[in-house]
Structure formats: structure tokens, C-alpha cells
Image (tube, rainbow, N blue to C red; front, side, top):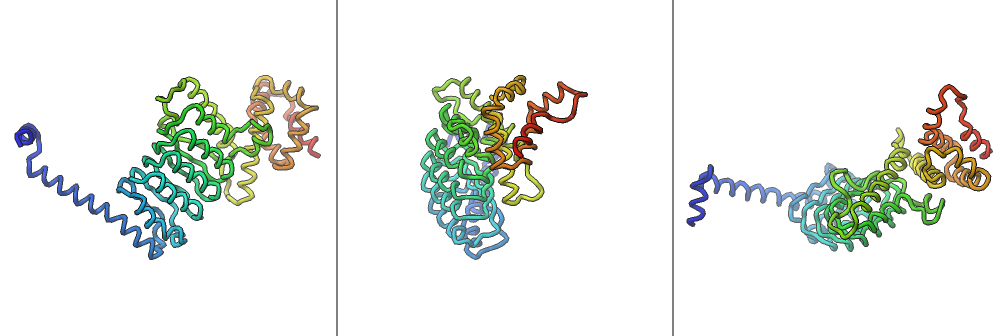
Amino acid sequence: MGNIAIAFATSTITFSEFVEVKRQKKLESKRIRSLVPTYIARLNRSDATITAINLNRLGVDTNILRLLTAPINRGQTSALTELYLEHNWFGPEGAAVVARVLSHNTHLKIVSVSHNHIGSIGAMAIANALEHNNVLERLNLNYCEIDDDGVKKLATSLKKNHTLKYLNLEGNFLSSEGIRALLNCVYDTSGGIQSLFDSNHTLISYHNGQRTIYNPNFPETTVSNRLLVFQLASVLASCNLRYSQPTLTTTASNKRISRRRVAACKILQYCLKEQRNGYWKCMENLEEKIVPHIVGWLVRYGGVDVMFVVLRDMPWLLGKNQDHKGESSEDPVVENVLASCN
């Protein structure tokens, strides 16, 4: 009691004010906690006005998650598009509950489970769900204690997912091995042209730019990690983001064309080794042996119009055009490519 008396004697708040603040905090905590059963009741009534559920910092555990997601799994929430469950008390079992929602739900576009102890096992459950999900666009897994094994599973599953654009992985236990798996997810050269085509072409970002996506405390060289992160960011910016700009009508056909444009960009970068200054010489050396195969393969999957747009917008071509201002406006590379397609 003596220490408490001294504390109040030297502070600017009286004891009665302190008691009132504590009382207000308890009332606010009670009010916030009441949101959970309120949401559950509204979901069970198939309330069509619920478009987003925010249960951040409400002590949601696995049992509450099961009650919350039961009506979602029954299809009673067609208007629900956003689910926020950050800073709560569930682990891998709770992540499995969320994964079940992602496997069946056809409306959720944003899901955030950051700052929960789901670990790699929970991440693997969510990764399996992503293979069957064709709606989700944003998934936040920041600070979820995910290591390289969980990231590898996510990277593998995302090659089968064509809708997710943002996957936040900041503050997890990633080393160079995990970052390399993320790079291979969007730019896999292990099997040449085919593996590049089978890479993920819709992801735009693995983090929101505030922090690095790897753990600097890992026993890995930070220079190596930073180089991999730079390569990953370069692919996402120069291919996935640049060539997958949304169109006025987001039909399934337009989405396929967008993915093919990204694939074409990556294949050309891979085959030309990203040599800006040696672009024309590289094309001449490859023309008889590889280029017809590349062009024929791309035309089969992307169409001549896609090839024309990709070649027209390639940075090497832009650089060449700037170096030859005043010359003929006809592009010989584009003409040769289109001629070989006929």
C-alpha cells in the first residue's frame, strides 16, 4: 500500500480517477467481448447485411472459431467478403478451422489471421485449402510463427491458385531456403519453359513493404537474403504486376489472357537471360534453334495478339527504340515473330 500511495502522490491522476478508468476499461472489454456471440447469432440467422467480421484482439480461440464458422460453411453468409481474426488465441487447430472455410467458401476475398500461433502446421492446412479456393485475393499470415517448411508448402500450393494477389508473410521464421521457395513459386526455372509456364502469375506481393519477409536473426547471411528478396521483388514488379493489370471486365477469359501475358514475359526473360544491351545479338543467335520453339509454344497457349503485346512492351525493345529514334518505326523482331506464327 505504501508504494501505491507514493505512486498516486507523485502522479497527476487521483485514486478515484484511476478507479473510474479501470471501470471504463472493464465495461469496454465486456462490450467488445459481447461482439462474438452477437456475430454468431446474426450469422445463424443468415443476416445478409454482414459483409465484414472484425474480431481482432477479442480472445477468439478454436472453440469460438468453430461456432463462428459453422454458418459460414453452411453457406448462410453469401454477403460476407472479409474476415479479420488478428491477435487472438488460436493455434494450428484454429488454422485448420479457417482452412475448412477457405476450402468451401466462394465469397470471402480477404482473410487475416496475423499474430496467431498457427505455426507451419497451420500454414500447411491453409495451403491445402488454397489449392481449391478460386475467390480469395488477400491473405495475411504476418507473425504466425511459420518456418521454411510451412512456406514451402504455401509456395507449392500457390502454383495451383490463380486468384490470390497478396500474401503477407512478414515477421515469420524464414531463411534463404524459404525465400528461395517463394521465388520458385513465381519464377520456377527448374524445368525450363514448362515450369515457368506452370509458375504462379497472379501474386503481386508477399509483404506490404514495412518490413522484410525474412527473419534477420536466422543463421543466414543477410546479404544473401536481401539478394533473394530483391530478385523476388523484381519478378513480381516486372512481370506479375506489370502484365496483370485489371481490365474493365474481369471475366475468366480475361484472367487467362492476363496470366498468359505474364507467363510470356517470364519465358522471354528466361530465354534471353535478361541481357538488355545484348538483346538483338541474343535473338540472332537463338533464332534458328530456340526462338521458333518459344514462339510456337507461346502462340499455342497465348495467341499471336498476346505475343505482339508482350514483345512490344518488353523493356529491351523500349531501350532499342530509344537508341534508334528517327529510324523506321517498324519493329523487325515483332515482324519476324508474327511472320513465323503464320
